Length: 137
Picture 1 (cartoon, rainbow, N blue to C red):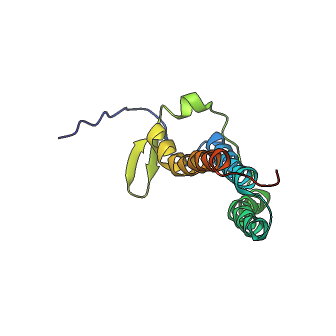
Picture 2 (picture 1 turned 90 degrees about the vertical axis):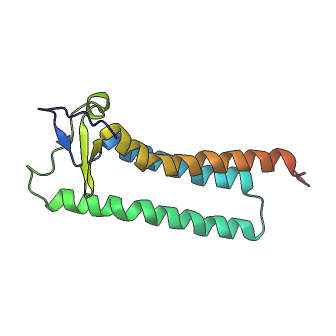
């Protein structure tokens, strides 16, 4: 049996806070930079990393371009930016297709996979860098 706390007269959001999107872009940049710095070394790996970088540029660039096109052509009442502080925003509820959850839980579900991959790849890269002898460096 679970207990659900119902907070009445609290706003329910259906959009992520802009800080969440900035964090997603930051974690993606962190992942790509850590791959280049810790695993790069010449040969065909640089070509592979260039393709991976291109993939991440496309994956992050397409949604940004769609958002910019929407913002330019949408009604000014629909394009207002969120002025609420993140600390206040995360205390409210967040609605999805499958139901409601706390905004803090939604942010965790959105950012955790990307953060785990970025941090994990950095750790793997550091272990590789310090364990594998680098000839000619």
